[in-house]
Structures are given as structure tokens and as C-alpha cells.
Amino acid sequence: MSGAASLDLRLPIGGLFTALGLLVGGYGLATNGDRALYETSLSININLWWGIVMFVVGLLMLTLGMRATRAKHPSSAEPAMESPAGRATEQRERDTGLER
Image (cartoon, rainbow, N blue to C red; front, side, top):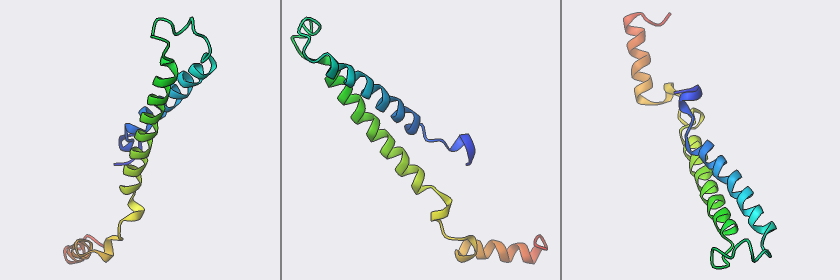
């Protein structure tokens, strides 16, 4: 497959989680000293912790998506003429007159 059909969904989802993790975690860092804001969550900085979780999940998805995309890249495969199946296909095309 090529084009949009070959897009691994882990890449855009990983990018989204990474960006949102940075935003939520950054907000948690900016409001770290505000006790009144985190009073309802037992003084736990929920924004900071969930920002870290989303950031790590996003990085994991990006890493797995890039790894899978790189493994399927056609430049890593051997040329058709150097594989037994490729040589057999070329010979069959010559025999049937498909190759000019």
C-alpha cells in the first residue's frame, strides 16, 4: 500500500497524546503551588500526573508507529531480481512474451 492507506494510526494518535500531555503537564507545572485548585483531589496535582502519563503513552505510540513504518519500508527489502520468487516471475514473463 502507498499513500494515505499506508498511514499507521499510531503516528497521529501518538502525536496527539504527546502534544496534549505537554499542554496538561505544563499547566500542572504552572499551577503546582496552588493548593486551592487541587483541594478537591486530596492535594494531588492531577494535571501534572496525567500530563506525564499522556506524554509517555504518546511517545510510546510514536516509537512503535515509526518502528513499524520503518520495518515495512520497501528500500529495506531485497530487489526482485535477487530473490528466487523474483527470478521465477521474470523467467515466466520472458517465456510467455509479456516482457519486451
